[in-house]
Image 1 (tube, rainbow over the protein chains, first blue to last red):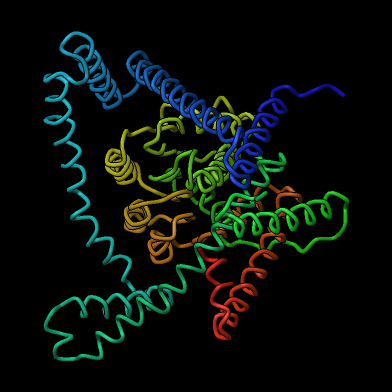
Image 2 (cartoon, rainbow over the protein chains, first blue to last red):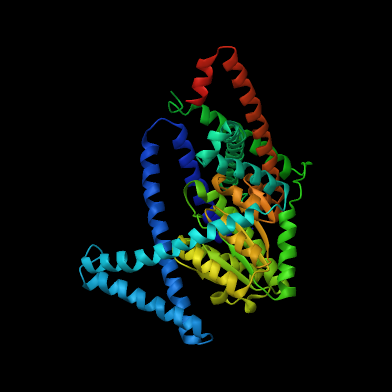
Length: 210
Length: 262
């Protein structure tokens, strides 16, 4: 039977690395801790390299947008991408580096403000989405409506003053069912994540190296 | 000490989990009977949504998760999301539906998503129908992800929105927009804080570890599914442990409880 290098080599590496991390977690600090720290550094390096691959992939993608000339909007997005890409690289290389004033200005004034502007969209989106969520379409949304309304009334200063029971009920919701539910959900999610790690360790997880 | 001080209880739990896992996987591998994973309506809904996409000629949107990344506590959810992407892409290729993949703000997922979607189309023998420029969309940071995703959903329309993985505000905007566009919403999240959005806004939700179980179910792999029986045994053990520690606390064995939860 032939050895499947494409699948087996990454799997053996994965198993070895997970084993090092697991055993190091359990044992007192020692030589394995140095190995784990070194591996963590390598993982950071590999992750950084995947960022580089992603950047190359994006350049190819936008270059194709330009050359294929299928869609005007896509061409405009591609031009925008390359103008900004070249501007950032040019300023970083020839105008004081990434800690220089020009780069900082570009990042803070252009990128920063545009990012904040995009985030402001959420100010309008969230109440609208909340309205959509509060539409009573299921038993879950009825529960959300009751608990959400109670908590909103509790946060309005005048309401608990007039109806003190609202405060008691709101606190009970937060401290009893919400906290219990959260802990139960976190434990089950933890078990699920642990299982996934064990499947990766033993090569039973489809998709990670296939 | 053999075990690092302060980690004795965690190591004990880990060893117990390994015992359960090995037992059920060995049982499955040896061909013995194992309980079947229950069916998840969300899995059928993805297939139904892809079919609907072909009928109404609107795309399927797949969000990899605005907080997904292949590292730390979000890695497990992200890997599950990649499994669902493979399943959804294969269905789209098979039925001829248009697919749009929102790539998470972490760009290293671009290469993963590209490989998975390409493999899915190749396995269905439909690679010539894959337009990567149309399908794979990277919007930059989390704000770009949101605004770009909203733009694509409103301008191109939505037949089905699937969002899996580590989710943040995407649980709210993606499903609200999907609902307003008349699309079907299917989702799964691995972060407790944002599960409320899925429960309220998605038509079919996989909450918490249901997402991991459904991910194993779609793989069709018996060993993957059997591992979840071990997980259920672990949950029963933790319930018993919770009851026992509560009783221990009540009868005055606070030192034991403190040792467990330190």
